[in-house]
Image 1 (cartoon, one colour):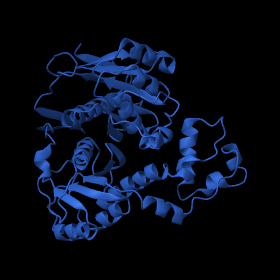
Image 2 (spheres, rainbow, N blue to C red):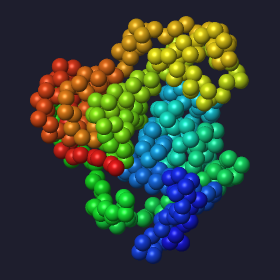
Image 3 (cartoon, one colour):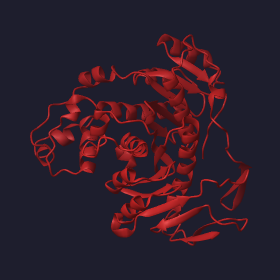
Length: 393
């Protein structure tokens, strides 16, 4: 089949809508369940590219959680610590989750607020563990190169049988040139087929030039994630997963602040004071996520005020003070930061330092490169200039 009619485009008033192959060949994606929409396919095809590249460069199963054509999270399949199992709400599942399920738990769990209602991309055949994890989350659909029979049955039962399940042909290779139209004008460019490998990580420009194997892996994860994130974009990575993605900001430092604030919230959720919040048994996971986000944020009184906390907690939690938060965040280390274009000012590095960044990857090429390098040296960071820009629009 070389064409698929869709219900509508980005919005209900945008009709007709379809996806099709201009050369008349078959579509590389098959609908196994549900009725996917225009945005579903945008997320699915971008997410599929991201996880395919992560798998190729790390050798590990990969997953990403997409929302509105940018990843909310991306990760490879490393085992989950006991703490991560708790903050990702999978501590009630079996301990030996499959690597693919761990990858999705990490991708979904890094920014659960943004991942609510996501579209999932998986690098490997979806197994039962991963399907069971997906079934319990609010999600629009999933794309993978295949599904076990049991996994497919589980997913087909989600959303009253309407959950979108797509199967991607892993052998598909797109044309070298790509086109899109804006206001009736056709744009054409060479496809972004840049391979992000060790060759781009050789130009260390700081006094500290030591990168652990884990740091090199995390740099690749950050850059590959940025390759499919709406620009301007910045990505914080730790232990094989994106922990903060700042997308679509006009100012570079606002990207860094946004991504850094998400990374901070990811880490604050691991503080014992947050882990031990006394939730009522009838509070759902999504509502717990919302409450935690507010509790660790600036407007904590919204969940601690009289008449509010009783609806969420069995007792009123103590305030998580700014000093307590700062003391906890000061223990966050070995974070990697990637940027899709150069840092024009050292304020980005100052902000990154507050979130435990030790490794930095950016293209370089700013007239203020020396100031950025000097700021990295001040904090003992190791930075590479990749020489590549990764804008995605």
